[in-house]
Length: 192
Image 1 (cartoon, one colour):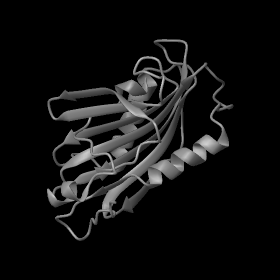
Image 2 (spheres, rainbow, N blue to C red):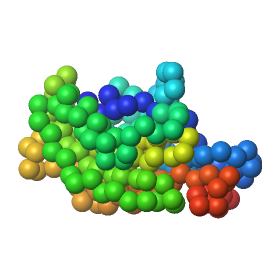
Image 3 (cartoon, rainbow, N blue to C red):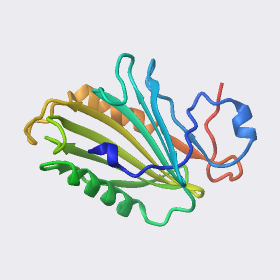
Image 4 (cartoon, rainbow, N blue to C red):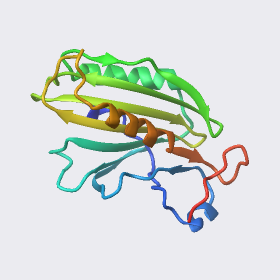
């Protein structure tokens, strides 16, 4: 279901060195959860997708996943439109969905939006999924970052994600930033 979300451009995990900043260009700073590793990476045309999971989980057999997708090139739609298209893609793979209100804002000078989506039961397999999607419209590409959970099907009114996980996801997303050392309006966070 959420695996279908649009594939997008190049991944730069934070913890990047000052050398990466010196190279210039728009950059995604993202610190994955401790111990998580890359389980999938794919590049097609102008799109790139990277997936990470905790140890002992795989791209096919996962409960928790971080997905980073980028589309190279100037964004062609606004944040609300991108989020709506992502929710429609999820709905195609689900018997029913629930989606929270989109939260649209500017972060570090870039248009950004975040939205939660729940798929109580996927059509393809007997699983339910939950996702928190963040879209950032950069100058050079569009970024979609997704925190995902997959488990047993559930009732749409009884989301199985514990409140502490929801808070951890929101905290994680608040630290995901796009920056551009070429432009003072988009400063990069300091690196160690």
